[in-house]
Length: 122
Image (cartoon, rainbow, N blue to C red):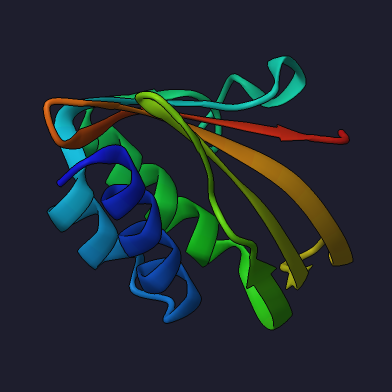
């Protein structure tokens, strides 16, 4: 798949809530996940390798009390990179309800996502 096809497939899978399937189909084993500098440490911080990214995803889901809504915008593709706007309205266990907007940037190499980086207000 080329970058546009990968971007379109990721949008399709995210909109359906099929995150594990996205990892299986689209991510490289050595993929890297990067958060904002203020949240880079800990179980929800940066992750290197698909297994670590999966663990981080599981920890994220464990912290959610209720998902009220969210959206995934259309991808913008430039060469081996693409960006997606995402939003969510979620109640976290012990932290209350929060609306979040972020820009997610992905790098593709050899038909797989090798890097994802999230930009959002902290």
